[in-house]
Image (cartoon, rainbow, N blue to C red):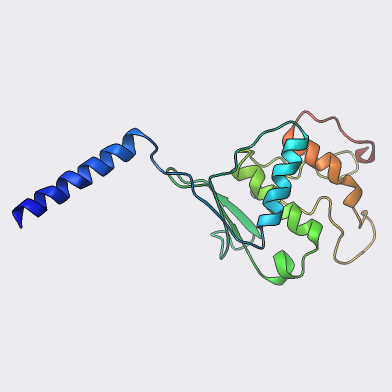
Length: 177
Ligand SMILES: [Zn+2]
């Protein structure tokens, strides 16, 4: 018994020691199948802008975020893979348009993979400068109800917002004036 006891201690030490010396946490890729296409698209959009991203360490799942008022959350905890939590309810996901879902996922990937913080500056016309704003992330989606005032179908703004996502120095577009 004593021998096995010591052997266990020795083995634990060896494993711990080994893990510490190489990689504290092995990369872990676990992305919900419903979100996977958006992650692949993010990778493509990065590549088409000359950015190579290694997306091998990421968790994306549906669940209850710590902050109840948001549709998504990026959690960056020491020693853990970057983790994105998304809410599955109607306005956040199930009844959201393709573009709105993409805006949400890309915003969270902006935090979790590009390590970008929020940016809340506005253009002269009142539109957000960045997809990384902390208010309405549906910057290039179609609004649910057209109540007038602002442009409802903003899909043509996608190229600008993705350029800005991957390069903050992107010049302001004509429609922002
Ligand atoms: Zn955010």
